[in-house]
Length: 201
Figure 1 (cartoon, helix red, strand yellow):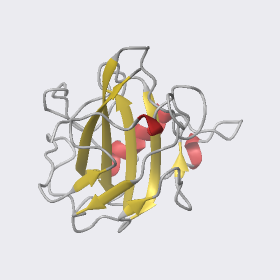
Figure 2 (tube, helix red, strand yellow):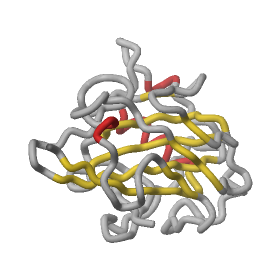
Figure 3 (cartoon, rainbow, N blue to C red):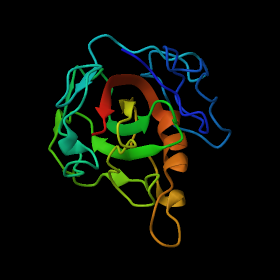
Figure 4 (cartoon, rainbow, N blue to C red):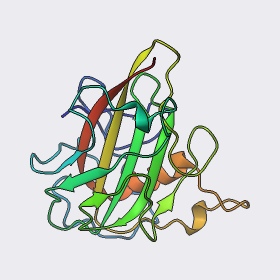
């Protein structure tokens, strides 16, 4: 599996061909949650367990159907999540452009642990969805320029607690993706990732 790190964010340490080798941020002084179930320390490099996986309507590393892009129906793809590690209390999802990782297309947290599937275009109940790089809450369909082929990385995070989002909600009721990812990082102890490409017509 290939990992990617969002260069402008304090994210989970990711160390593959698309990662920058950073590590998880140490716990803040006010952070009191125990992370006893985590297989790695929060300041150590995070390596995925082999059985934890996410898949969608694409072959790993191949092109996704244009249905899920701005050239199709701009709908979020269905996901299958398997092999969640023991101790998973909640899940979070991130989709971003590998070449420009600051472009966050889909960021959501607090999926119930044990979730095995997310339907096409669906937002599970009680899920927290952040504002994407297009300025809207929810899924921003990948949209490379005409004729361009770009790579995208979808990550599912396993967390030992739900993300506390009360302090992240802005006056207009939205949640900033960067702030949400910082919170996600603090409780993450495992990752599942999958890459796909979009070939623009």
